[in-house]
Image 1 (tube, rainbow, N blue to C red):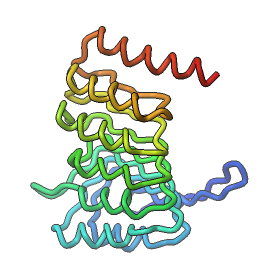
Image 2 (image 1 turned 90 degrees about the horizontal axis):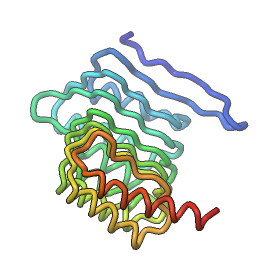
Image 3 (image 1 turned 30 degrees about the horizontal axis):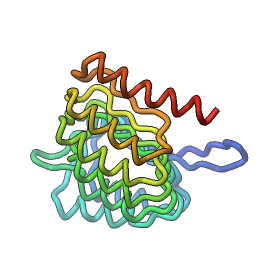
Length: 210
């Protein structure tokens, strides 16, 4: 389908307007026009190829800047023109949004340093970053941002290239961040010992909360 689907959902007496494109090709410029709708609460792109240069990407980021109602962003299997990344777009949403609660990036060309701007988003509760090829250095950057966050309670880094070193960074961030409830690291190269340490910390925290 080359045309975006606009769907209206009624959940808990709250209207959610979803802008969704899937299995298609589009451009940064076209997306910029679509996301300007103030009532959009969910932006979902699945199996989408996006064309355009850095200026076009910046145009999309400007269209998303301080969006008044955007709560959830779900990008899955995104392909950009050669050498392009979604960094400016992700950064703009995280830095400027006052409503964003969930960001899910699965197989998306983005650097960890851009995602690390999550520390500026006071409303984000769930950070989902599976299958992006993130390594231990990336995990350290994300862990530092999560540590500084006062809102994120759930982190998913499954299916990346993280080893015990990255896992330790995430475990350490729990010492200062007391609100994290769940960290998913399945599908990484992490030893059972390090996974157990992380899980036990989270389980003991859940037990105290209960």
